[in-house]
Structure formats: C-alpha cells, structure tokens
Amino acid sequence: MDITGTHSVPGPRDRVFAALCDPAVLMRCIPVLEEMERLSPTDYAARVRTTLGPMKARFSGRLKLEPEDGLHRYRLLAQGNGGLAGAVKGEALVILEEDGGRTLLTYSLTVALGGAVGRLAAKLVQAKTDRVLAAFFERFAEEIHARLD
Image 1 (cartoon, rainbow, N blue to C red):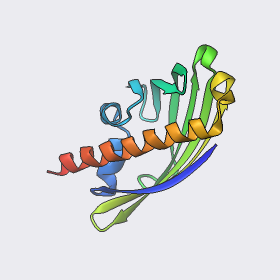
Image 2 (spheres, helix red, strand yellow):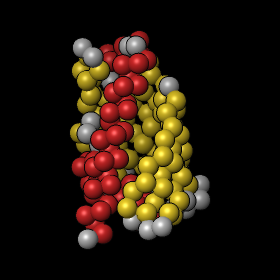
Image 3 (cartoon, rainbow, N blue to C red):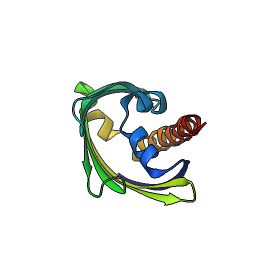
C-alpha cells in the first residue's frame, strides 16, 4: 500500500521537525498510539492499538529515523508485530520545506501488511489509514500553533 500527501502546518521548519521527534507530542497527536519511548536520538519503541472492521489489534514495534539532510528531509522506518493479527512494515520519506512562516510536509509512505491484517480488504485498511493521518495532521497543527503562542 502506497500513500502520499502534503500538509501545511504553522511554524518554522526547525520547530516542526523537533515536534515530530518528540514522543510526548506524538502521543497527543496520533490517535492510535498507546505508548512511545525514545530509545536514542533516532530510535523509538512504540505500541499501537487499532480497530479494522471486526478486528481489534495491538502492534508493538520499533521506529528508526534516518535524517538524510538535517531538518529538510528524513526517512522513517517502522516495523511492528501484532501476534495473531499479523505484522506491519513501513517506510516513509518526509520532506520539510519553509513556506512563508509555515512548514510544508510532503510524505510518501509504503506499507506492507502480513497475517490477518494483510488479508483484510485494501479499501478497509486504506480508509483507516486516511482517518488516522487526517486526525494526526489536525492535532499536530493545533499542537504547533499552541507552541507558537
């Protein structure tokens, strides 16, 4: 499954990038995130709980941030296991551009699903992903805006 998008958030790129690396901010902004811990400047442990149609699943896994060009561009690698629900593996490329006092976030996400979650209809998984991303960007923009005040 491939997902791309662009969102504009208030604030300069350095503040937006710092917030994207802050587990406390992400806990407030990602609706399915139950737990997140920063293990190093680039490594995180996380637990996600979600409902996809009739299935409820909890995934535990790791995230790795690979900066390619400082605050301008980074790659995020994710891998999680949900036991009987299956497994998920993903990679995102995120580009941050200054845009008149705002930051333009452009992302390209590739996700591979295995097990029960992988057998669900692609439209169901895509719809859930779209809702989670929309909620994240709405909450994240509010979070950054509050930090600027």
